[in-house]
Amino acid sequence: MHEHREGAGVKVNTPLEEYAMIGDAETAALVSKTGSIDWLCLPRFDSPACCTALLGTPDHGHWSIAPDGDIVETAHRYRPDTLILETDLTVRAGTIRLTDFMPIRSGNPVVIRIVTGLEGSVPTRLDACFRFDYGNMPPWASKTEDGALLHVGPDEVLLQGTTALEIDNNALKAAFTVDEDSRHVFVLTYGTQERTDDIEHAEKILKDTETFWRKWIGRFDRAVPHADAVRRSLITLKALIHQPTGGLVAALTTSLPEQPGGSMNWDYRYCWLRDATFTLTALVECGYLAEATAWRDWMLRAVAGEPDKMKIVYRVDGSRRLDEAELPWLPGYRYARPVRIGNAAAAQLQLDVYGELIRSLHAAERAGMERTEQGRHIEHAIVRHVAKIWIEPDQGLWESRGEPRHYVYSKVMAWAAIDSFLKGKGGGELDTREREGLKELRDRIHAVVCREGFDPGIGSFTSYFGGQEVDASLLLLPKVGFLEATDKRMAGTIERIERILVADGLVRRHRMDALVPEGAFVACSFWLAECQVRQGRRADAAKTIERALSIGSELGFLSEEYDVASKRLCGNYPQALSHLALIHAVLALDQLDRSDDAR
Image 1 (cartoon, one colour):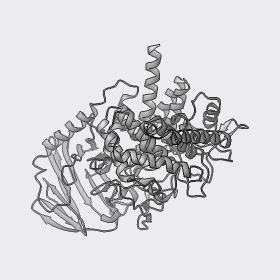
Image 2 (cartoon, rainbow, N blue to C red; image 1 turned 120 degrees about the horizontal axis):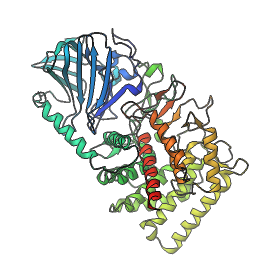
Image 3 (cartoon, rainbow, N blue to C red; image 1 turned 180 degrees about the vertical axis):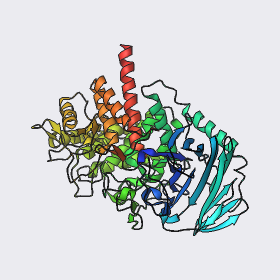
Image 4 (tube, rainbow, N blue to C red; image 1 turned 135 degrees about the vertical axis):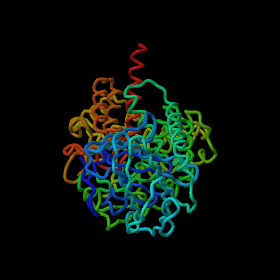
């Protein structure tokens, strides 16, 4: 059971896997299993949080609705195929249900919470302590006709309810009794002083929201293994796509540590080009061409036309400033500090992003998306840029903050940029001399990687030229077409990764040592499963997928990493790359099964 929230300033110890997400496709909130919104950024994913208890205490912002007494049982679930959360809270006096959701935004962001009596007569309390600027700024609160207005600087929220709210130290409180079949509605609206009529229409808004999600996920109707997990992952990804721009944020949160109590705490509320092809191909293969096209268009807007100015990560609107800062007033999730906002990795050179962008544009072309003039320009410009810089060292896929190295995966992705370009329409637009020159360069990069990045003594590719360590990015070499998974060199690499990087059935990015204090990286286990599928090892692939699925939350969410020792999710949550990797692995397994059935 959770730590009880009595008294101001008590540290919140709710495990990540006990949080659920609600969202409106522009921002989202994390709701604990005991009915508290502990993370909420308004008005969009990368805005400052006004509920920051996840990284601090309730005094840093939360909105709880719970029975007034010791909770003896909790249960939460989503209405099937939706992002509408239902939480049942039981005390000795009876049971109440919270129905939490955010309507898909058509104006200002709105959070609606409906309290329903299921059994008995339950004294209930509401505590809404909004603290803006990541818990640092209490607002000024004033009463309205049916609620209260809170504002500080540019931020303003209106909380309305069918039950009277009282102001207490610029926080809002309410005490009320929930009888069987009674209903109490509370509506939070950001950025308006005008009274809304959402309370009167809450039931219709709820029905419309339910219809939206079920209609959207209904477009995926394939019978695949682990279909429920795939559908929940698709809903999660849809909720992490910023609807106005099409950008997919890597995760909902910042500064959730990669190891319990650790300092590798980064801000993931941004859009990484690293995820470009994973995202586009997953959406296309699952039948979401409109979302895939929006993602393609977001990338082109963000990148514009100068490859040497490309960033590896952008804000959801495509802007480029992600200055990193620490927030010393926050004690961190389970005391893991520092708490950071922004991300200095945006300034790094990572060669793989060029390959990601070209591969995703090539995938868009194969999916039937019409090429744009900007797309044509950026394809040609990137390939010419890669031809100049592929030999340079970089920070690698894992965004190392140490000295640049010649990472094998980075060189492979430089190869992939040229290979994909030559296979697409772009290659056909070159004159013979330039096309032959690129073919020669592609073959030369391949030969250099196989010579410098493969150690015949250990029978494996290595993380970087001249080293002998392996890392899980090497599992992606077959996926980008560099070598077949059955190639002797690749098979040796997969075998070495399985022997060295797998712990308790899960894959780490690196060998576990004091220099890399982190958990198993969730996406990597699904990458391994894809390799096993490509090797025809169906039973091993199914086992790997099932093990990775087993660490998810009760509601099907995956974080960035998993701490095998404590058996807890860790890292930012929910993590888009983990859910993308899940979808790809399951679809690969399904394709193998279908090809076997066709024989």
